[in-house]
Amino acid sequence: MVKIHDANYLSFFSSYMVKNQNIKTQKLILKTFQPETDCLIKTCSEMGRFFHFSNIKSIIDMNQTQLKPMVGAVAIVRKGDYVLLGLRCGKHASGVWGFPGGHVEFGEHPYDTVVRECKEETNLDIQITDNPDAAWSSNVWAAEAKHYVTVYINCTLKGDSELINMEPDKFKEWKWIHKDRLPDNLMFDLMHNLIKGTK
Image (cartoon, rainbow, N blue to C red):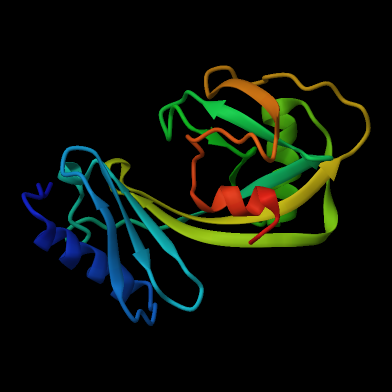
């Protein structure tokens, strides 16, 4: 385990991550640096990728630990000007609002992942839109030793199934929230643009 005492090691670590992700980066911008809490590193590449490091003082040395990224898929489910969001309360990313979704299982298409996960989490039946591919992101939670590559998929409701919180151990509640009244504590910054349709 490596403890960080200043921003120098943070810069080294972020450069290491960028190098190993094969990103041609013009510049690294340290958006915020709060040693005891969080910081956000933005790589200014053509695709505008983000790396999010939570609890900087407990970053794991990637040179000594063999970790592999996981693939996630999330559904942007719209109903008119409203979008479906869940307030997380589980072990990962607790206290923030996120889209329904989860891990892509072996052999599973991400489109099938979001349909399955949305049913498991909310009881809602959804379908993929004609223009499904919204965005993707690469995010590292160093304190949890987790790296997710996440795809965001546009979806709509299918049928008239009832919204039910099927996994109360992971989500405190699910809500239809107006795109102009989004909470501040969204899981990812890019969710604002995706929901508003400006991405």
